[in-house]
Length: 218
Image 1 (cartoon, one colour):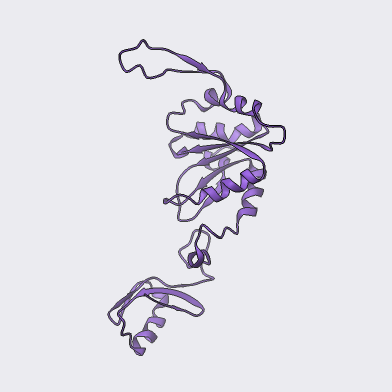
Image 2 (cartoon, helix red, strand yellow; image 1 turned 135 degrees about the horizontal axis):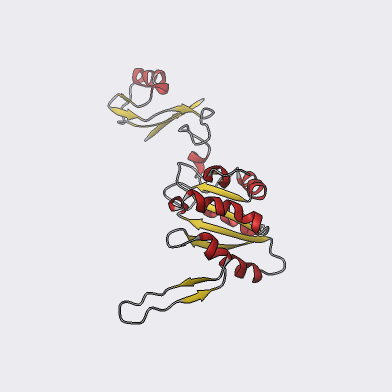
């Protein structure tokens, strides 16, 4: 693999013999996308400063590892405190969201991890005493157990020095608009609660206020 980088960053695969006229032609075609040069294939090239948020240009993270450099952690913390309920969009390969979770843990937050699949009614599960029917496998009588409110129970068990409780909802993309609106309202009902809902995936870790995703007013 050979790489040419001056003001722009270009990654391409080619044969060992690359003629000078092929290289000059490659430089002229850098902004034209994928092209074949001298028996090799050049991938899309763009300048390092052209990449927008979520765009396709080369960034510093592409060279040193996207999981090692997180320049937006400060903005992440400020947005969590400002909006209190966020919808996040981690990359499909996963793992990046751990950096942001760990930074919240350093701030003194405790976590309640839930999956949206099988959550039932969020208001009933999180704030009310709710029934749960265990699997009976067709051999035992159908039973019904009652559990305390998930959020209130965790809040009562927090240590005195805890900053708050983060309700981290996995696979929140399966929730309806009404259920997302309740999650966006939850920090108002319980001031020490913050909500992080995984509402989809994107090429890089992104987030936005959950109330905007749910279509509810502030």
